[in-house]
Image (tube, rainbow, N blue to C red; front, side, top):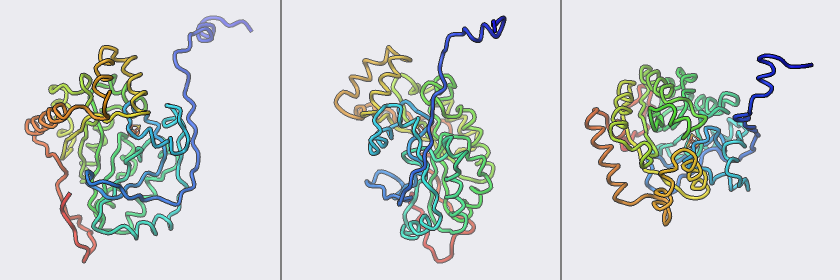
Length: 320
Ligand code: SF4
């Protein structure tokens, strides 16, 4: 058949980008709740229902975790996603061993509300378990607006546990975000999710991490982001500097080459001898966040609260 008109044009159109093939696999695991080493976190345990993350952030520090499975191609982390096989009784058994005084973070090495969650609903199943017990301190960190799906469930959890939800928003610039975080929901959608959760009484904060020199560290831009976070109902605002080591370093430097070639050499020099920028830059960014928070009226940290259905007799440590 001879193609004509729009059919011919479509047939001959040059391919701009082929749809990436993302594979999802089930991963049998004996471990749902893992001990977090080191003291720089506000939680002692982590839950990651998935391995790999389709959001594909160029700066994602967790890319190295796929190497544990001998998956070493740079794109494996974002294209080969593993969903753990749900086992409610095993989850409950592990939870029972976590001391009540210690905090649990959901989503540390992968986003618990990444696209796979629409299909497998593992984060939802975990929350359903938490909705039947009480007295925990929980953190959720995400870059998605999918928590809105679980609004009522999150409300139930927040009545029984201290629950804080961090939304990561690195910029208000949708185009910049598309390049940096190719398959994460747009920044305005994330802020809309903050607004929905906050209106439902769930404590939310906005984290502008990582701060990238010359890309999203402009004070005026950060101020505008903090203002929108506040207007959405966020209670705290913070962020940290970029941590960059292999294999993320190669992925991020190649992103810079494509999108910000003028910065490529600068980043190479900054991260040549270590995974973090200089102490001076670090202090400069801390001071910048402090000014922005003061200007907008947001806290640095979540404020402690006592949930209405907190378990009697369970001591609540308000320290964060
Ligand atoms: S959303 Fe988080 S875990 Fe997922 S790719 Fe981005 S930084 Fe990594």
